[in-house]
Length: 410
Ligand SMILES: Cc1cc2nc3c(=O)[nH]c(=O)nc-3n(C[C@H](O)[C@H](O)[C@H](O)COP(=O)(O)OP(=O)(O)OC[C@H]3O[C@@H](n4cnc5c(N)ncnc54)[C@H](O)[C@@H]3O)c2cc1C
Image (cartoon, rainbow, N blue to C red):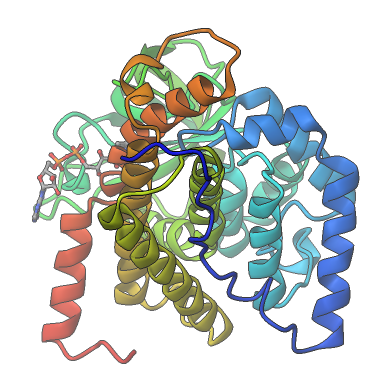
């Protein structure tokens, strides 16, 4: 990289909706309403937590505070039906809201309950489960983690071995879950357990809701190479779970989990996440001096890819293609989002130049060192994006199967 005096800030990704001419007065007034709310409620410490986010959620206290403010405003669950606490926004409004939050550096919520479990309970839960679990998800009193993966059961999830045996009106659960994001922050877990051995591994799995404070449940931290503690191993030693905490029928947990994964992948836009990395790049550009031509070319290509991704996401959202039934569509979006995320974090790291080598771990107040340290952490954390929520190889398998079966219509 050539370091010269003049900052080079001319590479910009166009905002698909936010900076394009707004087509309807309604959408324009919505944007103004959102901006006014963000300007009033996003304090500098919250924005800083948003800017410093490396993993899938921001630092937990900032995430909680932001959750509470959105909840009080009634904007915490835009994708939920209105009768359960949703906002009733159109897909355009949801997209714009995510973009505006990213543009204002809002923290990223710890949101397994909001994004995955809540929509699942709305779809498949009993009336009692809806009454009991939905309000604390909305308020942020309950934080949920996902207990699916085990050693030897990741891509091959149906190989899970954590067992649940019926005893009276409860299950007794024993085994261990691995890579459980935020288990140390959560008071509840939704989990897949084996209740029967069958010829087909997908049969005999049951979907349970587990209170993390139950005796016999132990959370063991796992620290990753970026120095962060995001995920854990969770050990179950005869943990008693009431049968009333089951979603769906016993032994039918596989279809319940498939339902949930569709929500996890499709109910939420990812443009906000990508736009946040782009903002980090823009900030780095302000102090990076003149760029090498090859880096400039890559930045321009990334700006185009980001705009294309956002346009595609908006198109799929507004046509209802991300409603959950289009498995290949959601695989395609997961693939393109995570690859773009990784490419952007690579360029962000390059922009930090030699500082990226020395900055991590240094506690200097200099903002260039802090930014460089953030670039390194972001780069390392983003390597995981092609692994979680189904690895990108598995999503490529889904796509190729759909193509061969002639099921891809976009
Ligand atoms: C940051 C992070 C957070 C996570 N959070 C959670 C969580 O909260 N809860 C949870 O339950 N899990 C979580 N996971 C686990 C995640 O779901 C698994 O890591 C993932 O499903 C892959 O499983 P595995 O690690 O066992 O790898 P494996 O399945 O062993 O895969 C190893 C490699 O083989 C490839 N491979 C495997 N099968 C095939 C195939 N059929 N075709 C082609 N290639 C194949 C994979 O793509 C991968 O490259 C998290 C993972 C990460 C990285």
